[in-house]
Image (cartoon, rainbow, N blue to C red; front, side):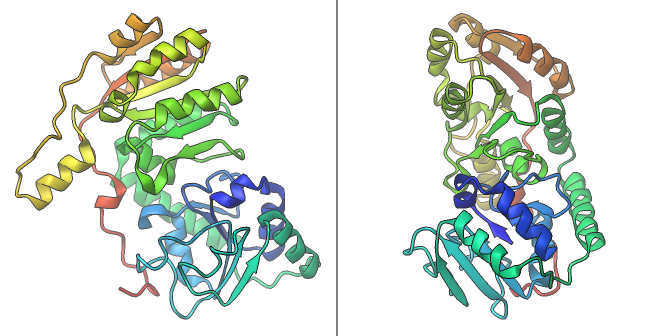
Length: 342
């Protein structure tokens, strides 16, 4: 079961879980679909973005893929998404999206929740999947171990964020290395608890989006992760946050670079870089000048204590975390998996 952002917007977590359990089928999501079902559920294989999540290992084993609320915009462009021999059933509320980006075996124009409810009624509790719980568990463990080996510091940071945040806290994953890896390593446990600009990769997205999320959900924790470059786009909105009492926690990961672009330039231009080295302010001091709380860490290992302090504060908080330039997942070749054609 392939779940996109449309399923999240349809508030159909209960129906998706019932379908997954009825079919005993794994559920994979796009970055926009994270949280459509709790990612600690045994049927969840999390987000498969960047060809490194557990869904990347599971997709080739599927005879049939049921897509709910996803436009499949990546399917024709990446060889690992859908294989020609696989049958594709697509449910989408927009008739223009059904079969638009990838040919379907069966296309269903329906609200996602109503469509899944109709499928459940037809199934009548029958289970036909050959997936086993041990297979799904093994895939999760294998993928988790590989991600941990590829990105140990990123995973340590993301695990700290998850541990300190409430289960229903809203994570706004910015266009930064920690944001990219969060798609794969941050378990989203509740519906509508993970926001991302996803494939738009919009610099400056996280902080202002977090302000809106907090206004709409004043009783939930809201955390934005941003790079130094991204936060620079919109740091003046600290004035809005302080003036309006919008108490979000923003974690700025500072490598003094536009990191992913810097790596691309080094790889493609023989080490010649243009415009990717940044001259930054002290972000913690900047927050204090606006009247927010600013916390500057000496190491990412201090993040847990800083988050606990931030959640107790009754004002907006900026936590500046120094990090080296780290490699994003889309710049790491995917593993070879049987059944995926080049």
